[in-house]
Amino acid sequence: QVQLAESGGGLVQAGGSLRLSCAASGRGLTSNTLGWFRQAPGNKREFVAAVRWNGHSKYYLPSVKGRFTVSRDNDKNLLLLQMNSLKPEDTAVYYCAAGPPPIERILEGDEYGFWGQGTQVTVSS
Image 1: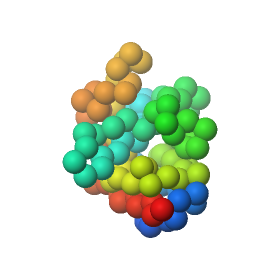
Image 2 (image 1 turned 45 degrees about the vertical axis):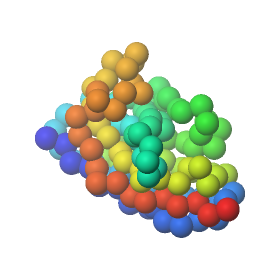
Image 3 (image 1 turned 30 degrees about the horizontal axis):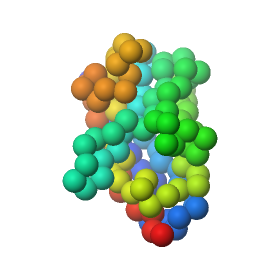
Image 4 (image 1 turned 120 degrees about the vertical axis):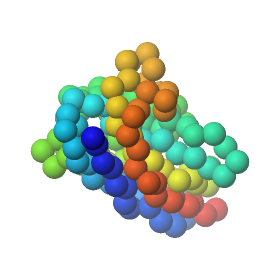
């Protein structure tokens, strides 16, 4: 069983930065892919970023690439998302997730079996 808890959300002006953290615990965690998803009101859940177990293979939603950086610290069981140059359209509840998705389905939320409760990110214009 894997447990995930996000923190670091808040209200920020457009162009600002936030850093989200996800504290993870449980067996087999280091072998899992860790990802960030988001969901805005009225929208479907959307993949944001993911990092494979080795910490080197990273994947991003095209609209956040170059602005967001995902990283993981397996020693501390921590997943991070540094978000810079935030835009109002980044406003959403952000969730961290863990799972063993195959590479071709790494963007699919259904491939992740464990989820956190989410943290709200609001970007004002």
